[in-house]
Image (cartoon, rainbow, N blue to C red; front, side, top):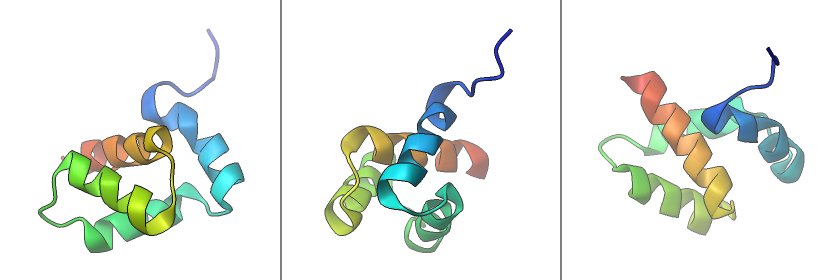
Length: 69
C-alpha cells in the first residue's frame, strides 16, 4: 500500500509549491476568516482574495471544514 495522501491532502504539496506558503498558513487564514461561512463562500474567498485556483481552494476548505467537525 502506498503512503501517498488521499483526498484533499493529496493537493497539499502542489499548493505549498505553487503559492509559497505551508498549508498551515491557509488553514490559519480560513480559521480567522471562515467563521460561519459555507464551503463555497470560503472557496470563492480564497480564489478572489488570494488568487488560488478552484481545485486548490476547494481542497483546503474541504480539509479545514472536516477538521473543524
